[in-house]
Length: 97
Length: 116
Image 1 (cartoon, chains in turn green, brown):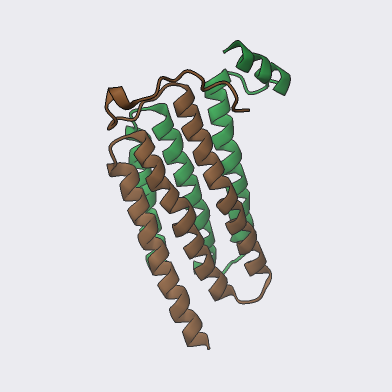
Image 2 (cartoon, helix red, strand yellow):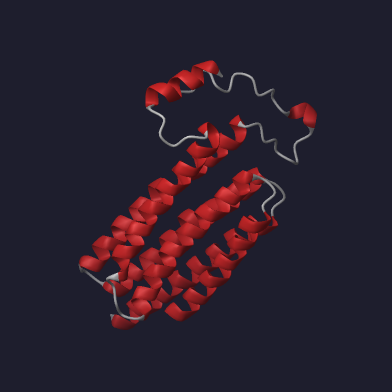
């Protein structure tokens, strides 16, 4: 039962990778990588149940956090070309646009 | 009771896997970025939540279920936020929907104002 779900998840991750490599625009790639990360969280959880080691769920939780922060950070980087901007500087650039 | 829980979690796993596959197929096959956002949303909310609920049924009342609830709440709130951020960035940088005729698209002025 868990094996079937894991196999389906692996196929879905492969398809998401296809979109991440082929995606014509930058945003397609970001979206595909974000979706890939969500599937990775599920895969880690399922593997934990499959091997009867539920401690894997801690890793899955950590991966969910990293995935979200990573997506937002990549988007911020592509918009401002700098990850260390203060919020005052961001507001100033917004005004300049 | 054990049997009922097994059947229920198996059904939830099957339906969740189906939605994950359908959403990812949409991510590959749909024609432009804004339609692909829609397909990715199916995977992130419905598919992921159903699979996590199936795991909760298997775990019973324990610390594992608490962790699963935390993961599912987190995914439930962050994946729409991430999708919104991607869509907002694409719109701000001027990516146009492919299937809408040129005359129907609003000019991208006024995007930066009154929004934050």
